[in-house]
Length: 150
Length: 129
Image (cartoon, rainbow over all chains, first blue to last red; front, side, top):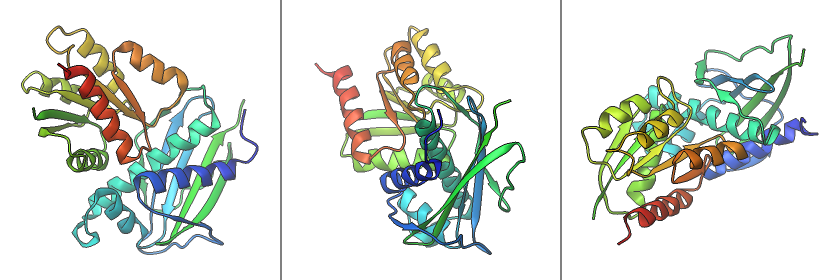
């Protein structure tokens, strides 16, 4: 049974994951997503009941800051590969958190997260829920595409 | 006694995070090995002395579930305690892994203190006396 407010579910998951393991505080909702050079997106497919896709998008500068917090390293010491790996892990953990709120009893298979060159458009077969959250460092966009039941 | 630990996760970033938590935990750590999937872990466990395995579940080539099953079926490796670290927090999944032989299950995200306490519990139970 889908929750009554999926957007709140995205917010709660972001708060839980970022504050617990990425040592990053959430400020609140953001009016819009900051994109452009330096922004980074990642998405992954999940299979279960329901199946779908999940993705995140971080505003310029935010990926490096979050990666430094997660790995316990100075921002200047991070490679692009390390930053990408952390953003993929963030997407993976957020997806797991969101799905556990969506369905407590159903198991899901999460495929490997992948970095995306640009925002992933919503499929016509899916219902997209999204939310943009303000962090101290920038913004975090989250989206969830759930396949519609046939 | 210094404990040798094996961290199994297909995410290099996650392995680094877990290693950092262990480094800062104050536990008496010996060698800290890493593997990207269950197959790499098994290969390593056959040549190195490891006192604790921390494993993800969802990995390519060989999953954490398969790894736990193969360890349980191997007379020479069955005694090594396994602690699962996973985003999967469905009730059936946790119970299933404990039934298969895992000695603990920590869901991601977790606080560093939670992991440290669980590692101490598993090592304390297993190597007490």
